[in-house]
Amino acid sequence: MPLIDHIPDLPEEYLAEIGRITVRWSLIESLIHICLIRFSGGNTSDARWLVLFTHMNTRQKLDALGALLEELKATIPAIASAEYSQTLKLLGEAQVRRNAITHATWEYDNGTLTMGKYSAHGKLKIEGQPTTISTLRQTSELIFRAGDSLQELSVTVLGRSSPQSGQ
Figure 1 (tube, rainbow, N blue to C red):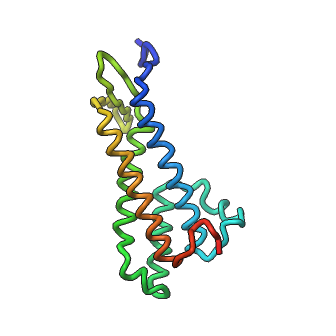
Figure 2 (cartoon, rainbow, N blue to C red):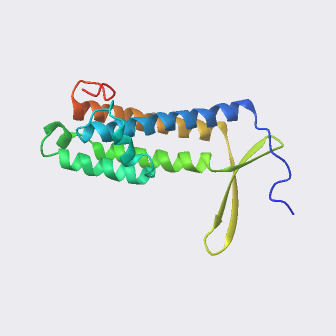
């Protein structure tokens, strides 16, 4: 018996939300890279920095970001009062929700979209749960809030300069 007997064609509104989640997360990953470079004292025009974290997983990048902020607290007073732990928490929650969606299996039948998940830690487990446009939008909005929070934090750390300026 095959695991899947057909490739489902999901409705456009679901595809649009899944695409929005993917693009918003990609933008956050770029901003995380920029923050890692700038918070380390580097210049974003120097591509050698990417060698250090391009192949790190997101959890490692967030851990590095948190450690950098902790170190910078002593020299940048504004960081001490910044709620950067809240930003890191939002980024972690957004990552978990994004992963659940982008790594899901999908089934669309009789107007119901089901998000599936496989696990094989000692025993094969196959789970599925119906999902809605609203749930996908909530994830997209969480990712947006996490990115916005990181952008605000970068302004706190770097001052008024844009994190992209490299100055």
